[in-house]
Length: 306
Image (cartoon, rainbow, N blue to C red; front, top):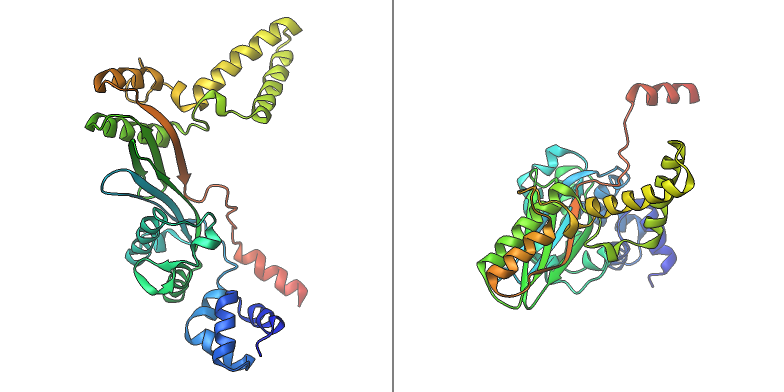
C-alpha cells in the first residue's frame, strides 16, 4: 500500500510533483529506489533539481478567438533570454495561452493539472516538465487571466517580443470594425502608459490614503501652511487620477484627447456607447527577485567553510 509518508519522502528526494510521485510508487510497487529511477527516466527528477533556480525571463503570450469574443493572457517563465527565444518554448507558451482562454480553472495550480491542449496524454505541468528536461532550465507557468464578452470585443497587444502583454475588453451593443480598432488602440495605450486602474472608482481607499499622506508631507516640507497644503493635496490627487486611471489618461496617439473623449467620439461614430469593461497588463518577470550570481564570492565562502 502506498502511504502519504512514502509520497512525501519521494517528493523530498526528487522534488517531483505529488501526482508524479504517487504514479511512480504505484508502478514500482512501493519500491522507493525504483520509483526514483522511474522519475529520472521520465526526466521528472532531473527537472525538479532545477526547480530552485529563479525563472525571471520568459514570455508573456496572448490568444484571441476568431470571433474576438474571448481571449487570454499568460506569463510563462524560464531562466534565460536564450531559452525564451527558443522555438519550442515559444510554441509551448502559445499553446498555454490558447488553453487559458477556455479553462475553467481559477488558479495556476488547477490550470497546470489540466490535459495539455497539444497532447491529451499529458497535463500542462508534464509538458512544461518535459521541456525543462530537454532544454535544461527551470520553467513555470506563473499566471494567467481570461476575458469573455457577448456584446463587445476582446483585443490584445504584445510589446517587445513578449516582454509586455495586454488584454482589453470593450463593450458595445453594435458590431463594428470601429469597436475593434478602439480595443486595439486601448491595448496599446495600456502597454505604453501602464494605468493601474480603469477609473477613479476602482482606486482603493488604502492607495488613496497613502498618496494623500505623501502629498501632504511634501507640501508641509515645502513650508506651506496647513490650509494651502490641503488644497495642494487635492490638486495632486486629481493629477494622480489622470496619470493612473485609464479612461482619464491622455491618449498616446493624440495629446488633445483623453481616453474618455476618444471613446465619446468613437461612440458617436458607431451610434452606440463604447465602454472599457476591464484590462490586464503583464510585464515579464515583474515582482520576481532576480538572483545575482557572484561565482567568486561563492567559491570564497566555500573555502572559508572548508
